[in-house]
Amino acid sequence: MSIENNILVKLKDVGLKRNDKWLVKGVSLVVEKGKIITLIGPNGSGKSTFLKLLNRSIYPITSNDSSFK
Image 1 (cartoon, one colour):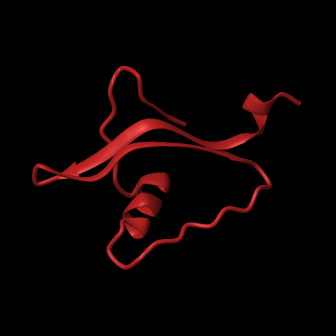
Image 2 (cartoon, rainbow, N blue to C red):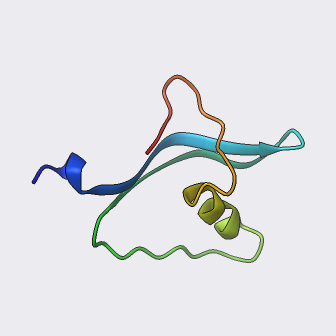
């Protein structure tokens, strides 16, 4: 099985902006099926916002070089 068929989430250079302030910027990530990942950080660092991007509760800002699978 190729790695492309095994990808659950793939982000390339995505960001989120609210009220002219970048909340998340330039994020790239690949998560393969069956892998366990951990998201850690201090309060207010954007963990919940990032998870909302992943479950598409909110949508990222993309450019021509960005991708969101």
